[in-house]
Image (cartoon, rainbow, N blue to C red; front, side, top):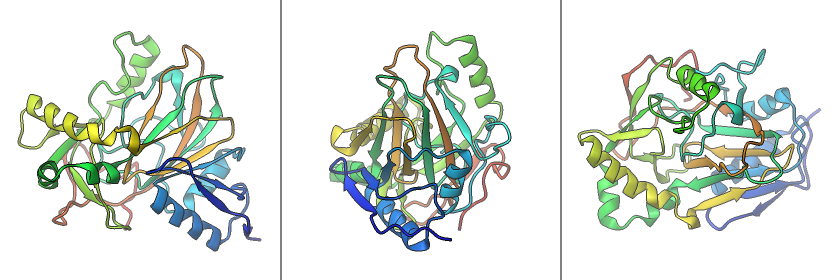
Length: 301
């Protein structure tokens, strides 16, 4: 029997992005009205947080699947054993303290991501999530005009999770991460397929502007990225065990703060399949190198 939540509440936790959802137990079989309310809140607030849900892997996948077909765990990194849609985000294998949008190095990145806390350090380890539509709106007109017409190459083949002092385990993870190499061209300004909002679609996997040199690309990407990471555009979530974060991958970036010493931190990620990004002129993203990643994700309508 479907579970109807009559007490569902949505409370903003930052001015431009992020809301905490209360009054709903995600372990239940949620009715369509509740799912519609969560979807509406996601589109409005970009990132939602659910405290103390105590989901298991099956429950996390069941919840995420209410918003679309699931991807596999990752294009190159193995999934959790016996759970092909679940990715372990384990600090012992690398710390993703780089701003990024999930898996933008493929042609159809996930539409949405869920992160569930399992092992939380006693201090630090927060997740920052940025509103890339607000960043676009913040651009002065000349920069907005520049961004509107350029494309960026995204790739997994760079030092995403390998600091200079990387351990052997982290280096091994890096080898798996780039075992299939992808290079994909995406518009720097993406039109959100549901809301029509314009947003900067860059982040850590964006390594080069099409038609510019590497040094020119770094300057342009750094300039635009500085608007994404303005404090006004960011929400900071402090994890407790059993929390679930749910964010729109089409219009956000996120960053895992590496400030918890050598303590363990473990989350599980499940992602919802997305469509092919489109720019202001309607043109869609395209592959430069690598397969179509159909082993990892369907292309959502």
